[in-house]
Length: 113
Length: 116
Image (cartoon, rainbow over all chains, first blue to last red; front, side, top):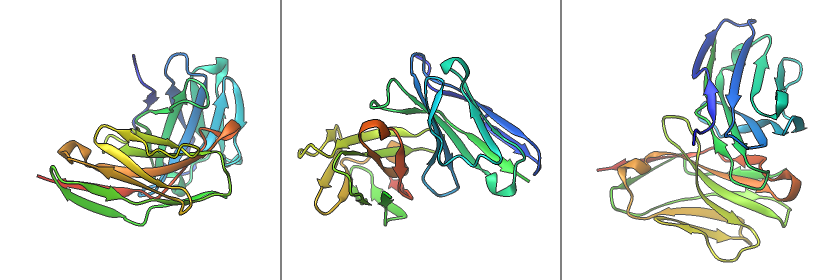
């Protein structure tokens, strides 16, 4: 069974440019998470979906970040415009239902120059 | 707010030896879960072990075991018979139970080096 797939693995952009990350969760997993991991730190939750509904987005900086999960499967996280401080790893995870193990993808490492 | 603290930025161990990674947390909740995750250079977070707060028995998964001290809010991970493949960053994490399950609060991480 394929795990959580994220793309791209790496992305380098100039500041003020837009960027998007894509996540394909494990088949059948209805809960999806986006985490932000700054260098040398633990991940922090940005947003959690149950099916198409964002049930927890309190940590998402809504002035520049947006996310969507159309049809309750794949999800896209967007930053517009990107700032230097957005350089980090963006991790996606999914679980069957909220109280089961969450499986993580390999993340997207974003560098803003 | 819940916090998770890992006071050991780095640890090292000889292959086949035992090492213990420390973690403390702060919460006022009674229903919660604690986790240890491993993150190798590939960046993929892998669940090592999970502990439900209502269970008194310490969780064990093969060479990995925890020492859960609920009153002291301490949750340490013991790795026995360390292997080269155990080298990674280890994160302690907390999740409130109920509808908030899955919202993980992570510690700062401990880099584990395994020497042959």
